[in-house]
Amino acid sequence: GAGVSQSPSNKVTEKGKDVELRCDPISGHTALYWYRQSLGQGLEFLIYFQGNSAPDKSGLPSDRFSAERTGGSVSTLTIQRTQQEDSAVYLCASSLAPLAGGLSTDTQYFGPGTRLTVL
Amino acid sequence: KNEVEQSPQNLTAQEGEFITINCSYSVGISALHWLQQHPGGGIVSLFMLSSGKKKHGRLIATINIQEKHSSLHITASHPRDSAVYICAVRPSNTGNQFYFGTGTSLTVIP
Image (cartoon, rainbow over all chains, first blue to last red; front, side, top):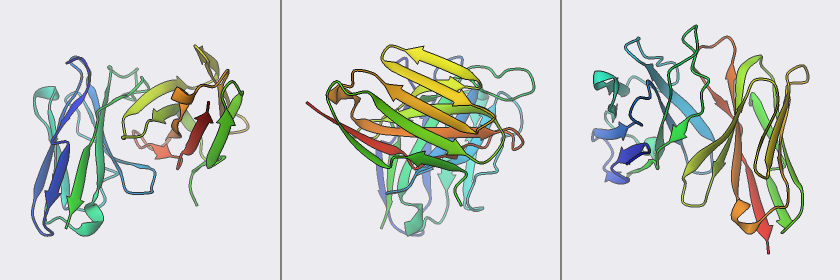
């Protein structure tokens, strides 16, 4: 497909388990973002990847959260020892190459999200 | 305190009305985005602004950098415009972090 895809679309897990969420960005997009949207809350930035540069992890809420991006394409967000407060919709977005200076100000294309429920 | 404030929080309009959604922010920014989130959660990026004004179809977005304010206007509103509209800013001194408003929920009644 031409858009950003995410899998799974829904994930229900038990407290304490680890989960992996996957994002396939649009082909050719070098910038990739992870966000989460908790129930009744606004969007929250988690992490940003740009090409082969070190990711910007400034939005990750705790060290239980980590993300990888392999080959500059697919990304995986891992949450270890999940807690009930991790329940949210996790959204991935991608955009084209950044302007000079490493900042991506291009339009972001969002995936459909993964709804995570931690029981 | 939220770095991005949107108003109104909720808005109901009759089909055909002109709609304005406002976004104020408290930090210097390199870019501002307007996003649209339909029921069911899909998010679409409408505009990215760093200055001035952009128009796309019935949508117009403006930004005043000095006043730290942006507006999203919808002309001749239609029920399919019903969605949550979110303002997001990229601060100019924090790399790739984005700050988001809590959104404006718009319902357009036929």
